[in-house]
Structure formats: C-alpha cells, structure tokens
Image 1 (spheres, rainbow, N blue to C red):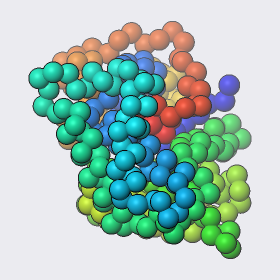
Image 2 (image 1 turned 45 degrees about the vertical axis):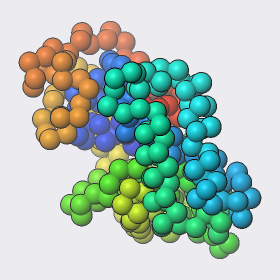
Image 3 (image 1 turned 180 degrees about the vertical axis):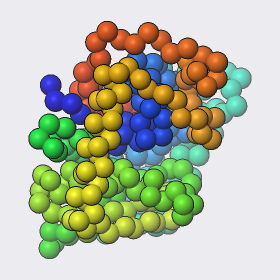
Length: 281
C-alpha cells in the first residue's frame, strides 16, 4: 500500500509533529466538538441543496434540509446525539438554528440557482514523487464552459486575519496540485467561502507555484518518514494547544504519550468522509 497524505494530516505535522503522531499513528480517539459537527451538517445541507432544481435552491429550501440531514447524520453516527445530553450548554434546537444561520451567510455570497457544480464532496487523489499518494475531499468543483476549474471550500468558522490567510489556503493548494497532476489543468480560482462572516477569499495559483508546493509536500512527507523511523515526534507548543484533545498525553502538559506502536497503521480507506478533525483524510 502506498504512503498517503491528506491536507489535514500534513497541516497537523506542520502545526505539531506530536499531534500528527496522536492522530495518524496512535489514532487516539477524539470526540468531535459541536463546531465540527455543525460544520459537517452545513456541508451536508449544501451538498444536498444542489440536488434540487435550480429554481428550488432558495434559503427556505436550505433551511428545510437542516433537520433531515441532522437525522441522517445521527442515524449513521449515533454517538453524535451524545453531544446534546441533558444539562448541556447547547440543545439540539439551538444547534439546528445555528446551522441555519450559517446557511444564511452562504446565500449572502452566492446564488446557487446560477450554479451547476461538476462535483460535490468528491474524493480526489494523485501520486507525486512516484510514491506518495496525496488525497482529499473537495467540497465543490465548478467547471466553466471553457474548461476552467474553480475549487470551492466552505468554511463555517470566521474569516482569518490576513496573516493566517496562507494557512487557510494550504488545503486548497493541495487540491489544486492533485487536479493539475491528474487533469493537466491548473485551477483558475481557489475560493474560500466564510459563511459566518459572509466573506469570499479568491486566490489564483499558477503552475510554477504548484511545482514549489509539490516540493514542499514531498519534503514534509520525508520529514514524517524520518520522524516515524526514529519514533521521534516532538510537541510544538502554541496557542493552538488550548483546543487540543490530547493534553493528557502531551509532555508539554506533564503527560506521557502511549507506547509507540510496533507496526505503524496503514492509511485509512477513505471511501467515506468522517465527522472528525481532518475530514479530508
């Protein structure tokens, strides 16, 4: 089986090598947060919205999809219902209203009646450097009549400050590289839709940039391989630690990582998109 890397796992290693180990090698369980599940629900609604005829893709129709899509998610993953146990700070009704509010942000920046996506929630992959499989899920791919590609990613959090824009675009550059290597076309536009703030961030890559990005991804994978061979994944403390689920195992917080597995697990079979951190895996 080929070595593989998703943009989320690559970002994990860039952020903190030990976080990469916890998620990809130890595979420590992580209970999804309300914010992550809300994002999954909104993505599901936007995917189903384009099943409707163009004239029917209205804010009211999207709102009507929220409850059925939530019921589907809970049926497929019953543990999600546990996020809203009695006495919690958020109840299901409030959660569904908050998802509907994010959909209002979507309609503020796009009119889905004028769009016909070529692909939605699509798993794409390519082999780079003759051995590394890079893969991930596209939220949406639009194809213009002249063949130009636009990669669209829905973000349910707030728009990042300018200093963090490059980090937000890392995932889309990953997808752009896959599309270029498999279809021979550099996407014309990489688009981030920030639904909470009703903002759009467009970026236009070029072939030279993607060549450099490919080198970066390959170098990152080689660093992961070296760390795996040495069993040496060190923590990299930052402000992001406040949101980490694994502080109890982290030496920076007085914890001890579990014993390193004798055999590193093979990459997961990515036939379905999980409701977990790194849903592009």
